[in-house]
Length: 129
Image (cartoon, rainbow, N blue to C red):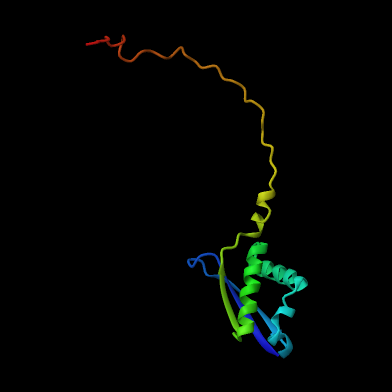
């Protein structure tokens, strides 16, 4: 069995967060990686990567990971390196947030005008020339 490793760098280059996931493939799957990356395996891969990274992986990002890894396996590369900007898991369902907000009108405060006085006396003269 041959080991194939995925190195997934998370975020920008300033943070050094990366995870690895390793597969051991038989020669049959090594020559035909399309048989490996089916829907149940993709779902399991997403779950494993989300647990390791504590980041949310959407369908487009998962498709990019699988496509890149499948092509590298097909070409014989044992190591695949990929960098993605992934959001933390707590932001996974942020687009489904439903908040009606507080729509009550706050009580009106009447202004205290007793301390307001003019600063310069009277209005300046209007000169139209």
